[in-house]
Length: 403
Image 1 (cartoon, one colour):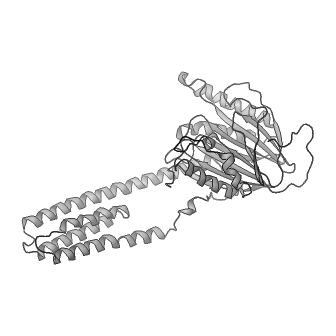
Image 2 (cartoon, one colour; image 1 turned 120 degrees about the vertical axis):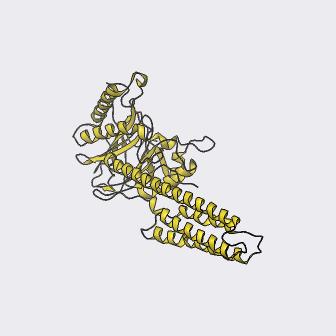
Image 3 (cartoon, one colour; image 1 turned 30 degrees about the vertical axis):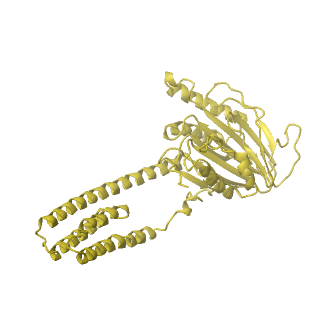
């Protein structure tokens, strides 16, 4: 299965720690291995030149293998730079001259002169191609570096553990050479609880980054304050509404909005509080089964109505449970037959895995479902409760587990 050109990463990082992913090591090589591989591959064109030269010299006079020498410099740019390509080309030219000297007609024959000129032109063109290819690779590496820097600025790594919670995340960007897009997530600690945001702004890839950055900034500004979750959703809605009013064109009126799911998980109480703004409901994974957590009081997406009312849903979140948050890019991913990705069915087989392993399995399975390339950005967060310090029974105002 071809790996998607979209950027993908599985993360579970501690604060202050360099981002790391589970996926890249599968194909990662050490700093010395590429150098060794390239030098090992140099044996191929050199051996090819020697074989063609020896066979041509030993062949009958009416058999001419010299033109095949161009194969060697033509292969070299695939694993080496212009200087190495030029060296292989010079070796091929020397072999062609050697063949001309030992042939009956000599190097001055019209046939060998034409072959040498033709080979020289082809070598020059190959070296130019190699130089352009190397320049393109350098530009691409710079673009990826900038994209990675933007990723670090906008999408801070989620902590691997906060209190009794273990966290892992997965981000898949649909845009070629992009590491971020319209999907977003963030987390912050606030007064004995962790608050999580997962959202999806309208659009995908690079054009949606600005709106994603706005929503992330608004969340980080307000989430740590001691305000109810519903009030936090109201503030985010006001930020998105102001942004849309200032920047949207008449043609885009009503088209700038974002779905969002706000989650608050207390450190000590085995519950989860949730406010949904038009976002897909999370999944609650327990040993042996998966439950879709419905939003009993969903509100419209952020930016649709300036004075939307936001309410709170509460459900139990026991030790050993895992809460899976995701964007619609996951459940709306289609295979070659147009079938949506069946997330609840697929995730059931990994319900007892760690958050990191769960993200790893979902990445592989989702990319396999779509044939290696996503049509939309996708993000997931897995939150696993390991234990609680103090258990309490849910009161009348706290509904139990929904299913």
